[in-house]
Image (cartoon, rainbow, N blue to C red; front, side, top):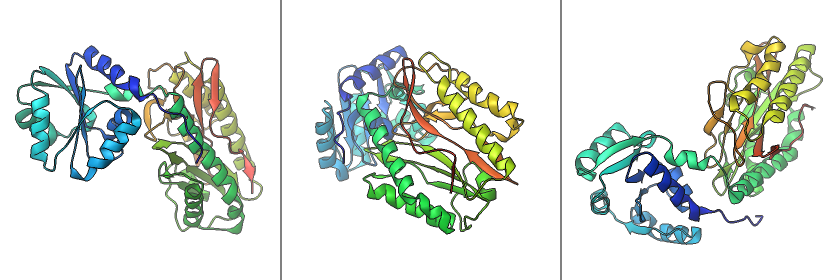
Length: 367
């Protein structure tokens, strides 16, 4: 595996503390595991993290004692690690450490109704619990050099895996067989997993934007939509390519041409200071002008990182201005059941004067 630069975890807690203070809270209980990982490097399946003005308290169960100590030390994170076997003991630790906290923030999208009721009555009865939205997630939007390197390596693995297995499409595989071969090659090349379940949609299945691979045989005359990604050290890549099995029909050729032009326009519009709705408009305008606006049925893209779908989305309904360090996808599509589907997607890093593509596999290929 390629040596990767370190991530700047040291500054993350301070940024989150600033966000907590601006939200009118004295501390934050981090319950979303992806946010615990971003702050501490911990990759286990159970943890809570109390972020106070002066320290961080990491709590997990007996399965993760050694793992937590190793991962937090490797990440250079300064936190008090409390490993308790029972939930009651974990509650006692956090209740004690939260003494004197008047307003405790909870991650509104990471706490169930039942959990909130329990936190209010049993865990933190002396604190006012404040629902917060996206405090840590917003800090995750700008990627540091180490994060970009991991996304870039994941994208390179995906590029290489696709190039290796692409010839298989000419051998009339089922969608499932091709997806399995692609997924296996991604793992062979060093990825820890796929970013998400690989999409392979051929013929009419390609007109379903999130088609699951089926037993349908890929055949001559099909357009084949392949949407997939690799994951490296927790960070995701995302890419879609559409291939024609044999020469495309006139309508299919026009679909490929229009979506290709829309995708290039969308990528060309990405830069710091540009609104995501303007990126969406750049891509969507070309498809609409071609008469297929109603067949472009999803936003133009999304952000990604430790999660495959992060905020902000690249959509007409989102009010967000891109900044240096955002990583987003640009993925317009046209879906016509009688002809198939076409989607083309790249992952790009926002720079001061444009963007840097992280995915590089060839586009618009005839197999």
